[in-house]
Image (tube, rainbow, N blue to C red; front, side):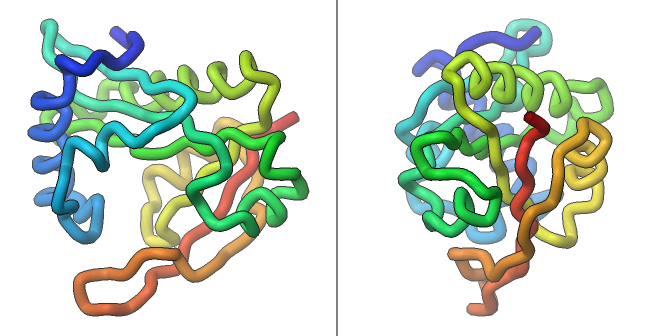
Length: 164
């Protein structure tokens, strides 16, 4: 089940994020405030729920937080963009189509706002890249990420734009 995120979902989502971090190294550096990472200010957020427990989420943000060149890379103005972010599903709940359902919910949210969706993904994230490309999203740039790995290096990331 996919539904709008509620504040009461945050403890379960932080636990799910911890499991994703341990298993998949996302995020690459564990945040000092996991709840703030899970729930940044934005345009909307959706959770995937199994058996009444939130097991994953996605957020939709304006283009103000990521570097402005992401929107420009997509051939768009920042005001035309909504950024899909913080998409994750707990390892125990993966393989059930929840990431795709969350992705589609946020994408629909961007369209409902009259915005074009963009996102970034680590270049080594084969599964997510496959998801975005099978949904018709177009890679518009490959850039250095604005964050650092635990070893101090900046990973490479792809920027994708949704179909028109």
